[in-house]
Image 1 (cartoon, each protein chain N blue to C red):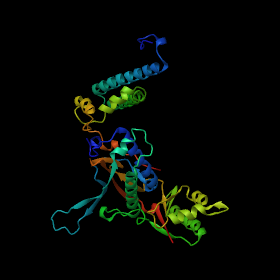
Image 2 (image 1 turned 90 degrees about the vertical axis):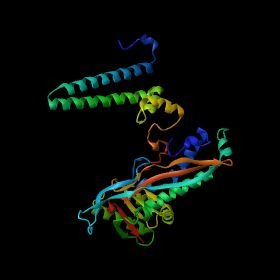
Image 3 (image 1 turned 135 degrees about the vertical axis):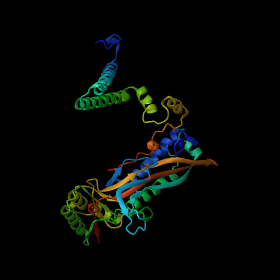
Length: 119
Length: 263
């Protein structure tokens, strides 16, 4: 149980779940790194395709872990809202967010009334 | 800042929430077309036309090179302005629960009416034919209250012959809606019709003749650019001027999914 840095009895159940999600995310990202290198290094085209496919699967798993974290750790939600799906230079996004401007390139329909499909 | 310019309005976040919520309520209540057709997710304010994937070939071209023009369905952009009293809106922050938003409610009802009109009756300027005129076939609707059951049964048969699966939605005007809702000889007529079509009966003021529509999906599309949104125009003399807007296109891909019941 080397993922814990504090005595287990000092942690709430919710903290332990967060540790589980963070460790999963870490492992998925590590796997993405490995598959990326292997896919790039092999001379066998079929193996390269297979490894790239596996790498993309790991990216999907990593994203699922991030989404869980976003739903359970408010700071993830806030930061992902600031940085994801934007177009302005990444280092300027925080400042733009603080200014309350929306030139960060996010989709303009984010402020719609979300009537959508009513069936 | 986007084209809605909401951050420039002298309105608190609380007021914006209430304005959005009230508009949402009226629109959800008035829009019926969206219950019947496929609503394609908003594609953004800069989306201008739905590509049809077809070419209109210019047969009589005097040019040495033959050419065609790509066919598209342009999006319609609507805007309805309305004014609200700033002092009255501020009362929301004071805890008032009966703030007068009637101008907003009227505007929401009008934009909803417009969308309904385009879906059902078309808009020539935009090359939109509308659901009623696009009907692939028509069946007679015999007179009298039992006529409804007969007519709808025949319409369902037409669908079956054309291999158009259900469920089906029956669109009716006010008089017919009242007649269906209040006819109860043994088993209520409304329930009999719903059992027959496997779907629901929807009333819209923009429907003239009753029409049966398959809601299996993939046949009729309302394509949204910007879904209904509220933006800021200007303010002065204690009033803030806002606007309700949306952009959309409408097309019928399979006319056989619509059967008109003509009286």
